[in-house]
Length: 317
Image 1 (spheres, rainbow, N blue to C red):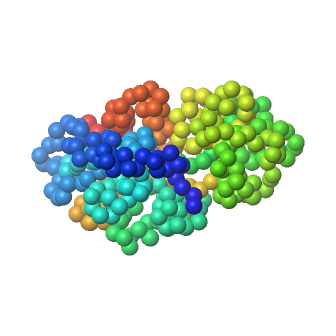
Image 2: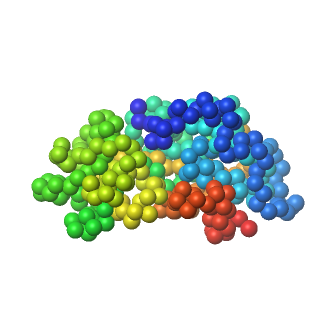
């Protein structure tokens, strides 16, 4: 089964996460974002907002928390509750009310459906399926946190590489371009075999460089590879000045992020969906990658990155 990438690293941490109750202050009061005028405070149940534990998820959750609090919604901070096996039951049981999930994770891990490669189709599938469970998938963000192919800038310039098809053309011409990938992806049905099928080519065995997940960027930096399998919102794409090739034939499943909310909460707050749509519309792949970089590379706090972004977009005073 196709799993959201970070679950490979975090399964072992689930027990610890449960024991600690979350690493971002589960159950704590929401961070102050400034006083909300009395006449804008909304009446209704407190919205318990959570997130998964990795940086991007924490950013999405914290932005929602700060933004909704600023609009006058009563909120509670339950950030960092855990990964899918922990946070999904918390949502369906009412322990939390809102977190951000990825459409690909919903389709493949919750529905146990085959990978989907179109954003609108993936969203429609999971939205309709989860409605029966009393869960509302609100408007998804343009950001797509999936696999991608990155290239060292000098290689992209030398071979005029802008799309994956450009790379395939060079392979078919007989150019030897070292492709850095992971052992798991090489043999999996929805990995390299699917990639080759979609782009109608065969990667020469001698050109595939197998490394442990996470070492792909260092391998490129050491010039032991020319291209690499990467994750589209990874900060090192920016810091290493790598070129992300356009997946022009949609070989990789889509993972658009969306706020997932208990329908009972949506029913209590008729303006919630429209308000969160204003936030999700601003979050494309480039934007979330830059925000990830501020947190992971520049070591700014999640709260600071979140509030600075919201203020810059006029969503927080």
